[in-house]
Amino acid sequence: MSTPIRLAIRGVRAFGPRRLALVAVGVAVGAACTPMAGPELRARVVDAVRRRRAGAEPTVEERVRRSLAESPRTWHLPQPEVVAVRAGDGADWTIILAGTAPDATACADLASVAGAVAGVGEVDNRIRITGREA
Image (cartoon, rainbow, N blue to C red; front, side, top):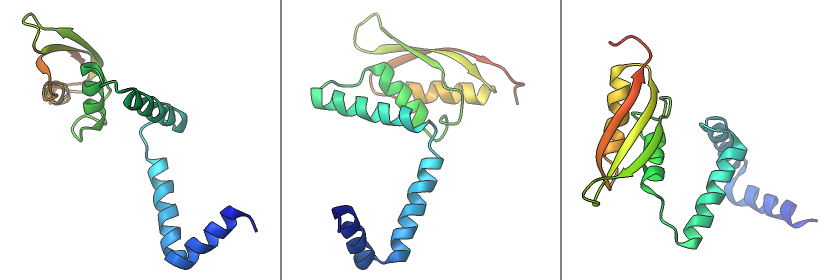
């Protein structure tokens, strides 16, 4: 009997078929609800692991993009282009957001979330509103 089959039998004995089935359903639902395709997600995870092993810190732009993609207020919105420019005094960064948003509230939420990232001093919001304002 092969090792994976033995492990599966031990898993069923230890946790029971119902629990293992619920875990499998949870994994399937989670995979179906991801906001990106599997290969893209895998590439991002591999890239993050490589950078972490190399000791590289994420840039301000990457942190802002991640924050916009993960925030409950902005993950569902069209993600803007993010450019970081060193502010005049050299301490903080100015973030330039460019793209489109469906309404003024969404535009303000994008700027607010970007401005809350550590190291961001100012947000230059160049996002155009495509829909009617509420």
